[in-house]
Length: 345
Ligand SMILES: [Fe+2]
Image (tube, rainbow, N blue to C red; front, side, top):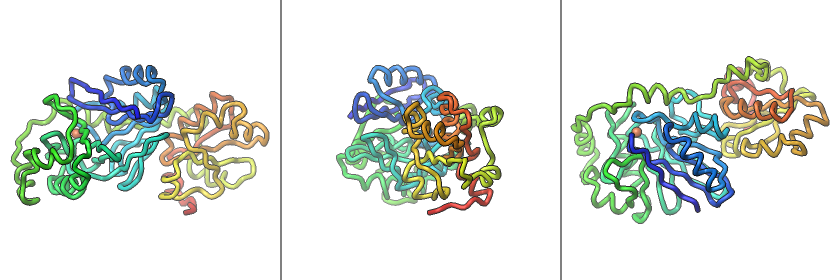
């Protein structure tokens, strides 16, 4: 496995680059905007293909690199389903898997620091975001933080992991890079409490100043979505109402870009072909299945995904591959459902 812990000195943020092999797919957890060029250089040097950029939660102390990485690599942006970030292209729920080629992480909902905090578990390690830090825990006094929820997330979930599990947090300000669940259980001063009430009292008594970047970072991080208007302005988008009329027509091929887990959880539009977004390029290139389908049958390709983010990128890529009739469902399956479109489970 390729595993790199990357550090942003300004915000004290750790970001993590993961891949199963050189030449394979990669994902990055908690990227920082100012470091995006450095990440991309490393991705190139290791001959990786960045396919997912993930935030453990909406950060208040730095601007996320999710939007810039998406713009530069067309990767999928991922957060938990509770996030208020305007639209990330894929939202995970508790118990779902975050996967790339050769790597699978279990997403668990660990609220408390914020109400959208997730941790990501691998067999030997856990990425804890700001829920559990090394000899500390993330503050709970803003962004709908809740010390009760954090106690439950830490004691009820993270500390139940095997003691040897490596702990990789989103921040450290002292220079520590990694810990273990056993070590934190024994030596984390915040965890030496006898009850939830004692933990809540401790957290409510911290009296911390707000992070310097908070007024800038929180609003900026809520706007990581693509600007789908530009795609619409070019005539490459259809509204959910228009899609309702197009679905099922013999001259239209609906293409579902989501992953299997999303299809199982949220349902599919009847009759749609399944082409996961990560397999799109090979499908729309000359000789690819979608390319040949569009060319030989004259069918119009109508892409959709969860919220219209991946499909907006897909329609641009298809247009670049000279599939000039390609369009996408603006707002994705969420808009389709809101317009009364039927969904098959
Ligand atoms: Fe945070």
